[in-house]
Length: 238
Image 1 (tube, one colour):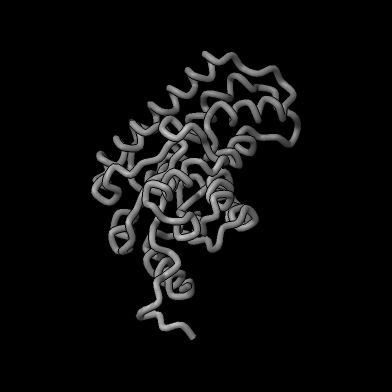
Image 2 (image 1 turned 180 degrees about the vertical axis):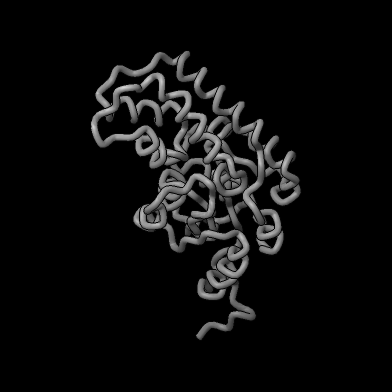
């Protein structure tokens, strides 16, 4: 039995997704996409709903999300400028209704690990959201996004960049994620993922989907996070 008082813990750093984990924005994004796409997709096949098309893809960048939906429906792809306009409208809606996930700042402050953010958003939006919600001091400008790294989830690049910046092997990082896209990226990076299903956008069956993607554990309330992380740390000594 290792001596946990002297043996270093395997997990030494915490990396969090932003939208849907720190910022309760995915429900706003979902509603905005429903409103924007409804007039563009008025005649869906029987048994197919717009919400059912969008929800499993939340966490993706907008372009692949839209491309996947139109490909699944067998429809011609939208022009790039139209997708950009949709993205701008979604971003504006999210910015106007910006709010932190309830309890997340208190939960993170109670976890004594250095922290970073790895997001599929753009760095300026993530930094602004952290400032506006008072969470910026928790992360010390450690933000990793596709515009900085060159890859978007499900590619593991943003997570690998965060571990590299910390100077630790990816396996020493715990990750907070709410989407299959994000869990896939973090697992591909060699990290252990705690899946969050307490956001306003979470659809039925998300717990099973996150576990199938490789999440180590799933939780639904940020008040439970410090104890969950402590339990993981207690059982993950090297």
